[in-house]
Image 1 (cartoon, rainbow, N blue to C red):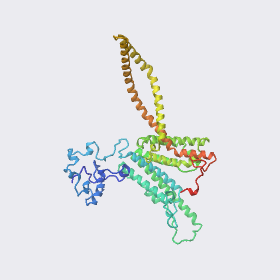
Image 2: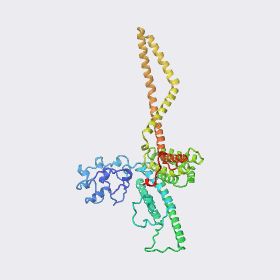
Image 3: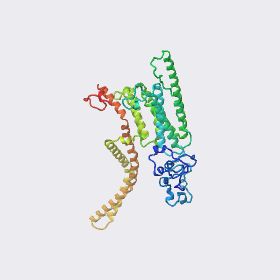
Image 4: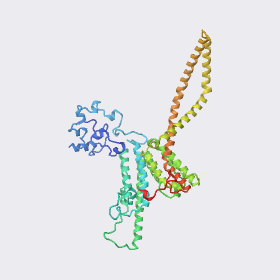
Length: 503
């Protein structure tokens, strides 16, 4: 049974649907163009699963499995791509090796990645979740039961209402999923670390005996507390060991993936909820390292994201420095501490592609960008004209007027005829000068305008991304004006929200 370059027992990574979008027609039908050698037998493709639904054995199902057992190549005369090209496969025809899958991009410096941008975004989320898991294990009560006593809740449990144990399990599940996605996307064949040891080290749930109504002895309470402290310490050690394993594995797999993991972890620690006095030391030089990492990852992060987050991070560092020095025009450390986590969530969404900063712009932003670009173009045009006027334009104009004057003087006929000859010659000369100067000038202007436009867009997008910083400053202004209950951005003549108005 021949196919269109059918893969024998190969498989497509299960995570490809989430990372690369909807499956193509070949993937949906179980056929691919280009294969990867060395896949272990017995691993079914999407076509195998479809073929088994129609009675076809694993490894023999193709797009024809859903059409009565006839393959696509048999329906078109049993000629494969290899046969049509003298035994050359699609991979060989394009110079790909047998280990390259379709869509996998070769990069000699950092290894082969089918979707490096998606892999970097996943590693950044993994670092963020690892830092959140460690902080949660330090602060949450893991001894409480997963379910609240007293029957079912009045409404469905929200994320913030989950018990400490369930939330820790959610973090560990996210870590395992991210590690599996990175392993599939990199395709190195190495075994990814696992959170199994952390799950095993999680403190046991405190479950009182059924029907027990007596209060435990007073001597048992300190003993139970000491046991819980020891179990939490073991859990933190297991989490740190997992962090070291993930860092080692990601750096060995791809340096940029490891750098993205470090970036996500550092960002999460920077924007952690905390007291106001903790904010200054979080921006005591750490932002410079984060900015350097953003520069190194800019080519594999979503468009504009690295530049926007870097500018926003610098704005926050400046605001923290001014607040620490007591600047009355800046928000206080209390307001900045309350909005820092919201700002961090926005940074993470921008860097992972969940939020494109350009979507935050409105008509006013684009009008400001256009106006600033026009002003800069005018300044550049004036400076360029001054630069080429004396060394270029003046000699050309002198030569032009001399040629026109000689031509007009040598022309036969009436003075009107000579004037007409002079005007025609002058017009032709000026046209030639314009074409000579304008071509290179417009080409240079086009190359210069592109980065100018992107720079102006970056400034406006960073200002929009800094929404939490603007909220902190609005809250500080309302506090200084004697209206602490005023909603930021609202009118002082409107009453504040009461508990009945809140959801």
